[in-house]
Length: 515
Image 1: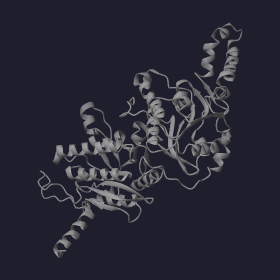
Image 2: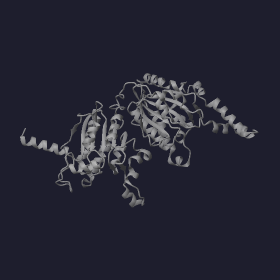
Image 3: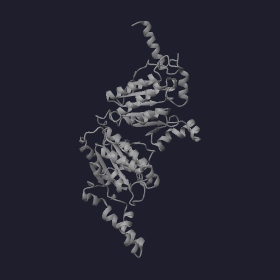
Image 4: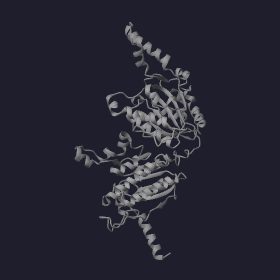
């Protein structure tokens, strides 16, 4: 090899490793952020990351960028190992041209997307960018279009995780939105279509970047963020943990782990979690803690639509997706946001061969004009569609209330549950005993000398005759009534029996999900 060219190669490599230079690296650190390469060091097992496209750069004739070198063109791409398994990644470098996306920058991301898809391995995108590179005009916009298309083609084939570690604005937000899980960092990451300045000019509304598109806003209000972390390092550790629950692709099964017993205190108190009074709230996470392997619960979208709980866990080492109504919030009713949250999670699990465990305690759909006019029919139908479409093993456990259409939506036998059980505290009916008694026994109640006492008697009669779980069990709508303490062993046995489940479906291009 020519000595001059070897020296040039080493010089260029060193230049690329320095990012935008010491001053800009210092500015990045002053904001509480790691650099692109530092982030990749945290994400990947030590010494395993292999970079590609290190010497790529924008065209020299781009107006406004003449003579401005940017080794790597503001993004680091490649692959490595996370927990010993191959993972592909790109990390936008805010120290170089603000991490903006131009033609070459986009080509590098598209290449690593294609490689991940061909290799059947997860893709992690570390987003920290000023958006489309204005100097490159339509070439930047076309670059985003190519990324979005590849996100879509990879959807349901390989896991795609987006980590927002700085600004992500305008059209750039749609790539994360097309991926499976979005992780944000408090205080330093933002996502929005139009920024505060545009909003102020158009509507007169004053709002800060953090209020508009910060991590807390997207974790609690929009539902865009699945997980939130206090800093870059914690966010990347969350991603490492998340990838441990997901298979490399849609052909493989999720990785098994060593079986663990559930938290002893939670397991011992399982019998007492659900109150005898059907109107008293409780935290369904206490039920989950008593069933799953200790330390395995990873909740997704925990701050959004809190009347529903979704997350990943392990049962005797096997990965499961858990969906549960949350009686502590809105009595566990289903509303627009909870429906979207459940449907999205069910489809994620089904895409990646993760069995579903559904814990049911819901009195129905949230009533009101806002819900009806907001499209609860359309949004609620997403849950029905997602569960009916899913071919993974599905086990449902009715803890307490399962009324009306919500009983159906929460994966009843008729909708496709492979196994359905009920606890002795379950109430399964078209509607709640109070409302049903008022309709069925209206005349008797009105004619009684003491209507309140007659109503109370009729409610108890309805609950005993029609709403108790033994009626459903006798008709085969639930497979058995089980004790809370038996639930974990039953779930483990059922999932073991269903491990090789296969379903034949009619050939079609795709269904028409009610979006």
